Amino acid sequence: MRDDRGSALVELSWLAIILLVPLIWVVISVFEVQQGAFATSAAARAAGRAYALAPDDATGEARASAVVRQVLADQGTPGQRARVTVTCQAPGDDCHAGTSVITVRVDSGVELPFFPAILGKGAAVFSLDATHTVPIGQYVEAAPGEGG
Image (tube, rainbow, N blue to C red; front, side, top):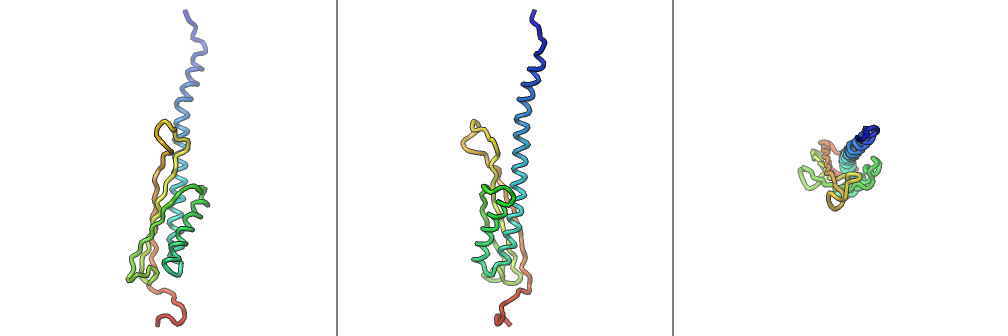
């Protein structure tokens, strides 16, 4: 007859490893995605403000892209790639004219940490996006000599 003393410790150890490792991976992944979501939201908000405060549309595009990179780096996700899309509803071709509405969309993604290579090629990416809308007031400051 075989003695079973000590086998409960071995079984408990294996059970802990089998259940704890995936649970820890899921928790870490959720934290990474949440951090990326906060960063993407903050980037969209800052890009909208930077675009609206720029003197013209071309400068606004450049500032919005630069601000998105900076905000993502400040939020602790410097490797996070993002695509910035700016659209506006304006009375003319100028997004900075009075009563315009500027919408900035930031599309991004977060790579899941420690993703097993067995499950697929490359890292798994969780897609994120954020949108921020900035209305331009009816009364816009003009340089001296412009407008009446």
